[in-house]
Length: 84
Image (cartoon, rainbow, N blue to C red; front, side):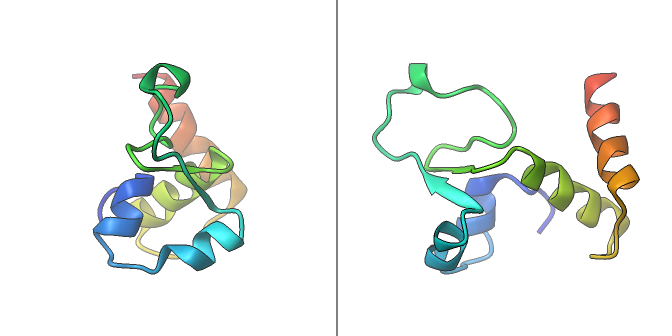
């Protein structure tokens, strides 16, 4: 997986969405008017992360190529995005 967007996590990886929803990682947003949804990286067309931090954690893991990341690496991912 190259992008940690919520819809890609479900559709690209062919994962069962129930554990991610039951564990409060993702929420379904199907049927909500687009005007009520923020235009952010962690909000997809059908799913969104419960906490925006999940997006940045996954992004840090992808860029490092490891699940062993630090809080500082997550903050660095966010900082790079904010300074674009």
